[in-house]
Length: 245
Image (cartoon, rainbow, N blue to C red; front, side, top):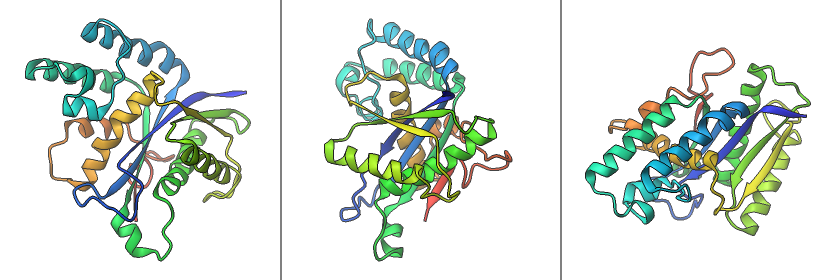
């Protein structure tokens, strides 16, 4: 039995604790949670429509780094075209009904605080899955309904380590001490998945909101309205936005 939800996960920043970029010293893991019906009926056709209107086909993969740096399919964009595209993309994301859970690891503080700091990806995965479990409980998803979590492939060793960390958390090594009915799906980087592309677009603006809180961040202004506010609906902090340590 499958749950009514599907989750897409992507990252921003690298997980290295030996080489930390002082301009972006964080690792971000973003979980985009959709009702399956909304994903199928709303997000997927909306993204494809935008691609067809812009490029004439839907083979372009929306990578945040390519858009910001005018690379790949976005290289021919002039200032007006880029502004128009970003406006349409922002409106699409704002109109889409989904929930965000983001974990931000401050790598420098994490390294300084612990003599044997946990791998940032695996730690943020645990924090994210714990909050995802809380979100699904708030939606009364049955305990025997499996929720699929799609992560982007990063290489065989990294993928094997990720799956091992995922299974460990789901087998009870979590703050609730319970088994989580989650299934991991590791998707090839070439997969033209609308959900993974949306997760990619969300991660860095969230990281920048933590690293440079006073800087204008229009993307985060939209995304913060999507952050999970906890089972009581009170606050995003510690729920939809977990900053550690």
